[in-house]
Image (cartoon, rainbow, N blue to C red; front, side):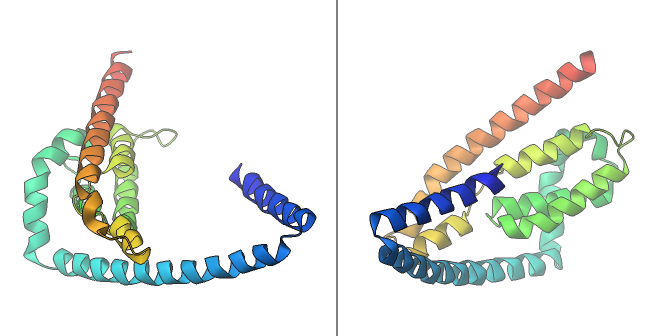
Length: 194
């Protein structure tokens, strides 16, 4: 649907600019936007490289094992049918830790690997398992302690205090995650009672 909406909006903008005689303003805004996009992209690339590198170091040290042990009781409760699947639990743990540190792009590979691991143990390939649904919910809502991407965007836009959004993000992500987990657990329980 968006494949139709965006081109339509762009086409309408061009037509309106031609009719209203603002084609020069349109050209100027396109080039100014390109400059801003490149600046923002470079800021995000630098931030993501830093955090992805740190996560790679964490993954190859005992820190990851310690974090996984701390998260394991929670993950076993959230993913009861995956508790014996070590590969899935490790990837879910890595994905969860990446999301907690606000590394959405770094969390994606671990999330994909976790989903593939969960799919291997899924008996009915036509539908998602309970653990697969929970993983989707956790990835969608994920609690963020350090919202690195948002802070990087705010810094690139010259915000006076880019990190001032940390507490509101904590509140919103905690509420969103708890709501998602509770809703998913209730729906899973209802579907099993049918």
